[in-house]
Length: 560
Figure 1 (tube, rainbow, N blue to C red):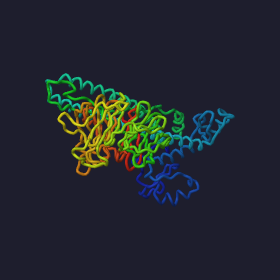
Figure 2: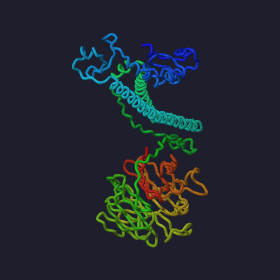
Figure 3: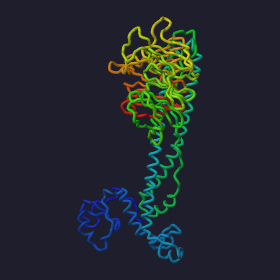
Figure 4: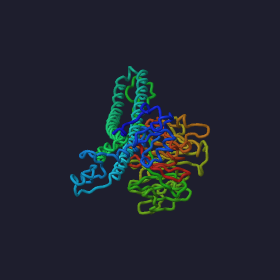
């Protein structure tokens, strides 16, 4: 019908079609198909009984959704039956899902169930709009996920390119000696990145396909909504129940590869000892956070089945706790001051209490003196994988810095019977190795120690062998060391891939080192809500459990 056609500005007449005088045309009567001036619309047309219920539209609304809605409403009132000439449709047959006139009711749709056509029309319009909203929501989800994947792709490619440049620059310096190793590293780098790149690209392609389908369906519905033909709405309704594309967003692990050049000038030696190796720098993701009732937890040991042991020195508490339902449940508590502790093979616990005696808390709940080191005081304690016991010892009765030059500061290595096997105190040049062996761990056949230089302010990480040879010292990065806050390590953990994880308390950061004492990653964890990280442990899934001073919280952190 003529009134259902789209109307543009070029079709607007020069004068009012009612008075044929005024040129200030502002309105259009949809039913009469007349353009009206303000006076004719308000004073004449609207007061005529024949036109009181006509739809009047401001010309500013032409080509808008409101205009299309009004046009469809008029179209609906004059909707002719497709089967009976000059008959208007007043009903909607629920059984046949189509409009019907009075003759249809008697003939084709006899005894069928009917609804008022206007009521069904509104329902269809409502369904269409809801479905468009659903499309918009799903499209936005796809856009968000695509943005994440695009960023992953961009970051991965940037990391790939930057790492490649470092490799090639190092190759230039050592080209003749290590060209074969360069080729191997580049292949390894590509093998690490390309599968991830392909996965991301495949995922992007699948998302684009689903997004395009949703976009097409959305556009079809929008086009139908802009139509002035009510029949277009009904013809579209048959596709409203078409299911949305099923898609499960994949969790893609993003690993960034970092290349660390080997600072060894012996060019005659080739391979990783000279050139360097590829390392995957971990990212940190908080899984959960648990509030502790203890204000100070200098050490934490993960057990099994979401249980752990936490020790407190000031309040003299050793607790067995369980993590459940985002809370900490204390299953058992023993009164003993805990400075450091380590599990034995038979589920006992060696406990250092800054006393002359090293305590043993047995599986059956007894506290015994394992060995007295008088006049020395126990500090860090660690049980190795081959069941050796390593204890840090000092002569100072209190924490005094700097300690007296001639005071004793050593590591004692012994078997489970307490028989001493090694004493580590001086290097081969008779220089003292340690200041305050605060925490101890082992990596393969080497000993890694957190050595405190200035208590509560400064420390270092050192690697020694059982013969007392110093292999390396890590004093932090230039980015963390300052006059206000030096590198302040308090604990360490070692992952299944031989990465050394060290919390830097005063700088709210985590340092990740390789076996050579070189920093793979430095993570500012304050942005994750982790402040003053002091003690930590790592479980069999390489998940970190970090206790924070001041917050009295234990954070569960996934390395990804």
